[in-house]
Image (cartoon, rainbow, N blue to C red; front, side):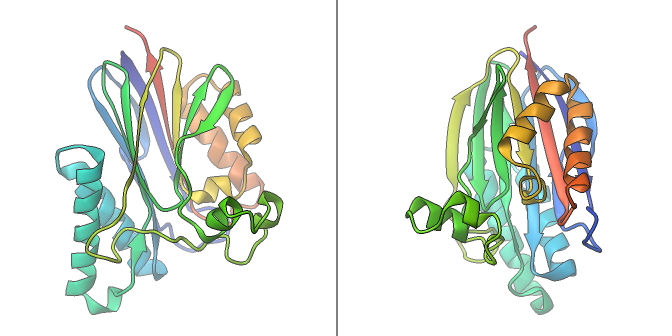
Length: 238
């Protein structure tokens, strides 16, 4: 199985700086070997957010091993950076990482509210669970999804990289099939576009690059309230 991929990251229409980071760096490509992709959305102010997300991505993609090992290494690296530079204290980041193998096996590691989806035969399935205040309130039956969309704490995450010496990592393992598409994204996309709209855009654009561009453009057209970062990966049979 081969993989075609594309990554895009955009500042959006409101923010002055881009605190997201992505791997591979924005572009497109095709591989017939294992592929690692990742999205991080930094927090802690302009400087801290950018440093946290880039440190997490650089570390997670620079070490070997399974997703959990990479994410724990990223967590320690961000924490260490904040310790060495006190002005960055309290910075953190989300991190969602996917490793796809030529045999079709997919491993997703996840901390925060950047999401991973699988698009198959017209259906969009959310692979990850948001580690956020509103998500936990919805799960507890204390908040409706409709009310969550405009809740003042909708951007508050309950789990992040770089805040504690160890972090709980959600791991999901799936099997990819020919024609499957994986989407990783920061909440700058999902805050602007609902899942049916995302599914429609993925279905209307065959090429990963045009799909990624269309997603970013649509989020900006809806307001672009935050930085927008996406990774699109297509599985293609040999």
